[in-house]
Amino acid sequence: MTDLVLILFLMTLLYMAIANRMRSFVKILALQGVLLFLVALMQLKEYTGIGLAWILTETIVFKSIAVPCVLFRTIRRNKITREAEPSLPQFVSLLIATLIIAGSVLMAGMVDDAHLGKTFFVAALSAIFFGLYFIATLRKLLSHVMGYMVIENGVTVLALAVGNEMPLLINLGVMLDIFASVLILGIFINKIGDVFRDADIGELTELRD
Image (cartoon, rainbow, N blue to C red; front, side, top):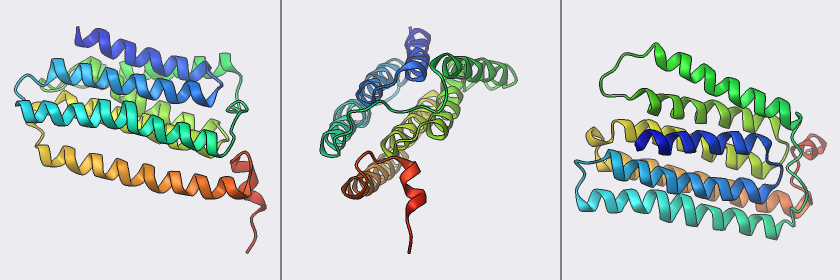
């Protein structure tokens, strides 16, 4: 069952590769938060009630509710109504995302660790590499924040693979780091939006001292 949820997680990456609306990206990030909670619920069998409550807060409350709300508010405030403006056609983007997943499968085949499931490793690597690709190919500043969140979701998948051995303090540190990063980047995007209407990274080349 866990493998099925992780496969659905991989399918969200493929959907992001062909989507072209900023709001669609935010909705996918919210869905990924729900999928991560389901993975945690099935994987962390040795966690106490408090531990699972913390995972619920980190995935559902933070990833699926708080962050999407901040991103939607940023979209509305900066009046980002146009498409995400990818630099590659949708078919090419889908092909690259597929190659990323295929490459992750090949790398997972080289790993021999009893504590790390192959599906977890594939999902984690795919999300990390796809997040980097996402950042590199989209021009909107807000899409870079979303790419960062995809990378972080990949790291979370990797952490859940060995979650029974992961102290609660580390989870706390990870979440605080994410919160601070999204808050800072959100403020940055809002300020950029006050000057550049579309928050396009191409506009940054016109900045002068």
